[in-house]
Length: 314
Length: 256
Image (cartoon, rainbow over all chains, first blue to last red; front, side):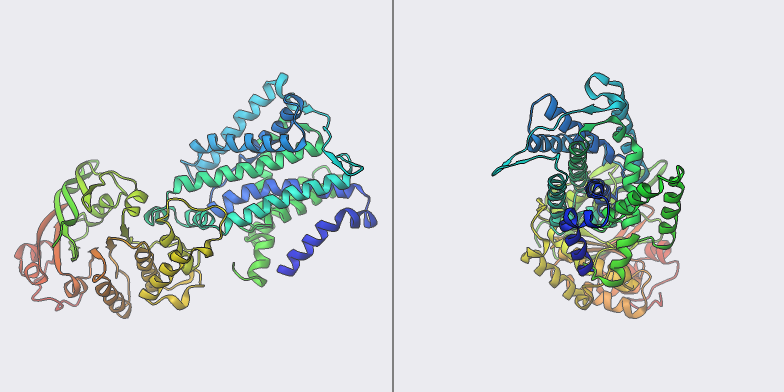
């Protein structure tokens, strides 16, 4: 399992150099995009897999992150890194406000309220065209990032952009890994397993769920911000709850409650989409079949099953 | 004896038209192993649920260690030092046996560090290890709690309670559903523990209760029927009538 993980890590590190030798160079950008969506999936997974909360609303914080970048660059005149920080902070704050209400509920009630929140903001974003650009989105030009010696650092260079996204995503995973092995992370899983017992040992399930929700909002926000930088625009369509639903599906296919499973699920299903949608407009049927097969025969997901087979438990 | 560890005044809990606990006064002196017995529906578990914060009382007050805790949330009461096991055994199934007790030992820290590795907390680790040792589950620390046999789950639940370093331990039918061997093992653990912590337990197994309890309270129809030593309770005709239906001659004689 460790060897497999290391191999994927090395591949990701060398991809901008390796991929163009094997496939057309735009695959570097596709891989970068997969990492971004994988981060969104890991946000849904933090809630579902570790804290036991099924959220269909992570696209809302993704949207906050995307608009945070667009707003930061176009209105506040921020550079790339400050706008990224601004966007993550905005999404985190939005998650704190929504979470204050949402995590009072659990299970289907929680799932429904997350959908409702994201629908409200989606409709606001679509309606408020002067500010958000609605469905058309809000385009912007990338500000310069800085210089390294004589070279201008710019996200317009696919290789640099890839490494920029890779570094931010990797930092987010490092943070997740640290949180999950911390006392707070153990408390997440305790609340997931048995909230009543968690209360009886002196944990406050509400606060622990809130902490998880806010952290998940942060992760979704960062992925939305990266996506805006990557595609040079923010759009209300990515706030729609079906985007959150995709994140949940990627999570389940890749392995709920595993650190990298959701990203693997995202990679697999995005590749299916990229490859199949060219030939067949009803490719979603294939996605549906894959999901049904996984849920029925490999309920732990891809990474979850591999871990059960080869890896130690923790 | 010092001040009572638990003091309940006029406690009432109604469910619609049903009064499950009716104006109960109860005092538990520190250092006592006390058992509450009574027929099904006597209100024992409801009494526990109100005391431990699962339910709000309809009337009355609960004082724990001299502090009014009436209507507090469960986790607040737990942090003050009241631990509880449940009638339907309840642990963290998907966590390892070790993590079950570790989180219980660590939860007394109000601040849960989000970035420092959990295994670096030596104090919580020591407490968790001792708690597992105390119930004899140390060898199974790495197993998933969900894979344990029923009797071991009950012991794990007790270990979780011990790891909280409580002042008062509420045990809700600790030996229900256990085999005779498991019962014997658990009863001796409880007796052993009672030297270190105040224990209040509910039990159906009269034989087990009579063996270990310092004093016994009999509940019937939401109220306290009588209180006293095993011998005096067993001799009380009201108890025989209300609870047992058949006479109990002496402690340990019934083939329950």
